[in-house]
Image (cartoon, rainbow, N blue to C red; front, side):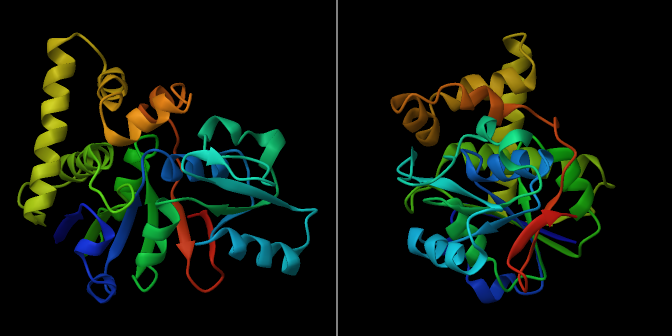
Length: 253
């Protein structure tokens, strides 16, 4: 079985993902927000590249049963209902409704994987569930979204956490990993060592380390510090978001 991590979408050709189960990771915050939306009963999340694409889809579907969600530069988009903070996506906001969703980095990473055999959405909150869903795939590629074309440590740590779970769930030697998967796994192991040394839970250590990552610093600067511990929680949601390329809907597997 092959297990690969890619630190940015541009580091792997779309065609190279065609036969793979791809787990898209944008920890801060698109992946986490999609998990929260579906866990809160959203009918589906539709990832869209541009703000104009959302407007076009509203014209097709009408406004009554859709929620407009997403961000640009971390901030709420004018005219949208919700931003990209996972804690906004509560049942009273999204239950039974379709979320039309566009973000700076996460939806672009999803679209990069559009010809993959399967496309799953992974985060810390659903790490165990997503690893269980992917563990029997002959090839798994974890695709980090990054930020504006720059590698981000928060996504690498989240990828390492998923790698760690996949390895723990299978026999030794089950996976043939690329160097970036090995590197992400080492970074996660170092985080776990730090948690033990500081007598913190892994989730608390993760939240603490997110404060110094590129995405974490951005969120602190725009007043979204509360999202860091939310996005750092491990295995709190038993959801497996899967993107159906034909319908363009992300729903629960």
